[in-house]
Amino acid sequence: ACLWCWNQFPSDARHRTDTVVKEGKAAILFPSANEVFYNPVQEFNRDLTVVVSLSEETNEAEAQTEEKNGSEEPAVTAAAGERCERGLRVLEGLAASGLRSVRFALEVPGLQSVTANDFSAKAAALIARNAQYNGVSHLLQASCRDASMLMYDMRAKKDRYDVIDLDPYGSPASFLDAAVQSVSEGGMWKVSDHCCNCKYSTSAEAADTCMYALRIILHSLDQRAGVYQRYIQPLLSVSVDFYIRVFVRVFTGQATVKNSASKQALVYNCVGCGAFHLQRMGRRTSNGKHMKYSAATGPPVGPECEHCGQRHQLGGPIWAESIHDLEFVQKVLSAVSGNPCRFGTSKRIEGVLSMVTEELEDVPLYYTVDNLSSTIHCNTPSLLQFRSALLHAGHRVSLSHACKNAIKTDAPPAAIWDIMRCWVNFTGEKEKLFLVILNTACFTVREDANPQSRKRHLTRFQENPQAFWGPKARAKAGGGISADLQDKRKKFQNKRKNQITDSSQLKTFPCKKFKQLRGHLCKRLPTPGMDLLRGVFSQTRSM
Ligand SMILES: [Zn+2]
Image 1 (cartoon, rainbow, N blue to C red):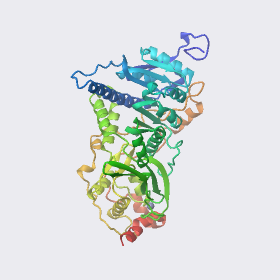
Image 2: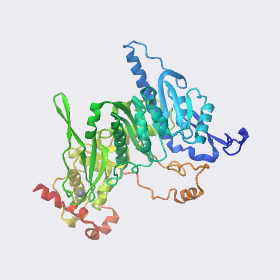
Image 3: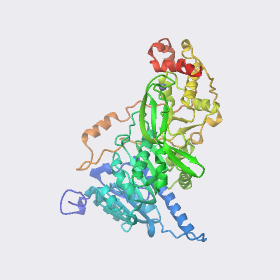
Image 4: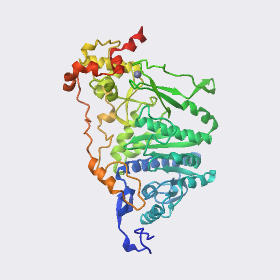
């Protein structure tokens, strides 16, 4: 087919109907008929990937300098766009237009080669054209193969890639086995997932949250790696917009692989009140110098929830260890804030990464204030009031970058429900319910309840930026997306009710709606919520 319009033969440059899109230092040709190849919302993803690779590259350079036995001169690294003989070998497994690979070639120094692969012959031709158009053909090779087969072919130690980037439409699950074998020792593996929860062998029904999906992916990566005596070390894991992106390093080592089970956990999630408990899959104990790995004991919960008397759902397994390497994140963060004009989405990268550095590392999952309130049908406390109450009670608390109203805390569920009961009492709702308050909570707002990233008003979450915001449809064979879908989008765009984003207005009295309903609340509230409110189970616990 014609290289320019993909329809007629022979090739004729007059058939050319390209659109040029500029992003970062790249200018990419897109056939106008196939707009699906370019998704501007993904710019954040690509910017983040480039800036992470920049930090990775400085790592390599430092390592090389150290190898020179502490000589004063830093190792000579080729500039961006130049080929470096001892540099990094990069593979983008599902490259589509090649935009990300072209940006790599133009913006990241110290590369030996970039292989941009796509199963579609049209895409591979487009990649080759874009490499030429941007003058990086000496660095960037287009490849047209099944990504898994390509990676299986390159799994011999001498052939492995230093960086493997997988960003498929939908789930990356089917590529993991090939990818984990073809990453070099200590190499970086970047995986995106646009369709969380569906293709892994774990159940995510219990708590359908972004953080959950993120940890399920990390679990899958580590499990796959374990098959080949390898293990992962998460550097940065984010859940933004409609996708998940994780950056991990891969190492080989039998001893650490033995430890893998103790890093994974099942989650017991109460269907009544949402309380969750983690059950580690293995136990690690230290006896002097040696680590001992043994079977875990459990379960951590009884047959009924101790707070509301309901059953538990089982979810996971999930990755229960830290999902970021804070030192690495700081490095990336300073690379962005030191050069704010470099990337189109610098502000948001700074916002998200700042939140990441504030997150409690050792608390895997979170509650949302909205869910807690809806369980007992009460007015929602403001984020600041709730955080203050937890801090007053001596617990640690943080937000999460993955969800606007998330509360990460080391407080046990019992303490959280104590606070919620006090909140109901505090706001004067439901005085007819004879609340039993075991521990009084204080809702006076503390200065340290407001995290830096929130105080500085950093852009942490994306506002819908444009029409047709959202995941792009899979490319059709003939190009473009179906008219049906286009109509649907027009019909439903921005039809969702605007959510209130400003939680700074402090509520100390019940809202109008609740005042009107108060007389009927007792009948409307389902049993677990009522039991929670009355503290039925807490009372038996304290006796
Ligand atoms: Zn419960």
